[in-house]
Image (tube, rainbow, N blue to C red; front, side, top):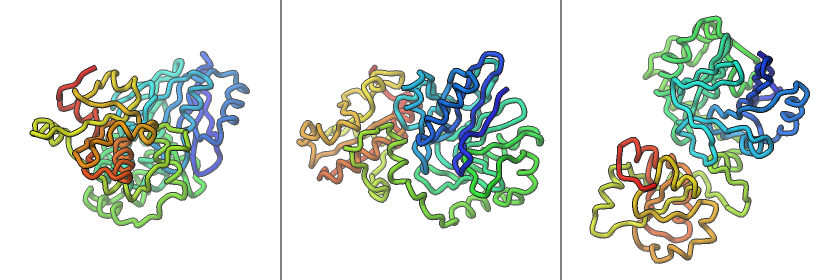
Length: 345
């Protein structure tokens, strides 16, 4: 197995390649480094076989879609990843094959809902769930310290103590650790109950990443078009959220709301389908097509996407344009389908 860490900075990207088949994977690639990645693949004579993001990043733009466009390699993320154009969605217990290398998948939410960790042979790639002598913050939308504690203790720490730990970030100059070392010395986890961990993580008071406004929503939506002005994060936090069952009840009311689906056309008719009666306007087209729904400015509008993230952005845009009664389907079509509610395809 060929293994390299490629960035030599706070954000880590890992090259993993099968030396027999020359198939390779890039884990958590950074958009600013695409030329470097392609050069290294060429140097080793490897074909990019998979591009994997362990979660939706908030401090750097992912290179996943650009690498897919340049090489044809599939983009792989957890099923809760909010972005479109993910070719393979994973869940806990599945695996990825890179040539003869088998990568097992742990679902490890907490930092984000779509966090995964990948393990093979003597190492584990922990994303932002478990860091070296630390853990990933849980104060972004969808973060959950309790879920993170469970993921670390029940899944990652179930690996053998000698397993090498490679996180997606490091801020102290570390390059690797081991499961045994983290069990013994990680100051956020060792000796803390689940409730104590939740209290610690919910009161860290960390500043937001410098580039979060420029990075997070583009990563969530896979939109490169700078003409779409994303709303400030504070406006996203004010969007009214409805559960799938609450939306179902609204559909049975005397004044049915406009169901506005902001996914891509292939998602609308894809595996998750869409709620009957929905109107499709992809997020990137919403500002230009706002005239199509002007009649609903003073009526109920429920916005829908895959995981409830892009639709929250769309709901904030609509509110800023004067729509008075906008709500978001929390958890998106994933939650709707998980509850076996009606869909069309």
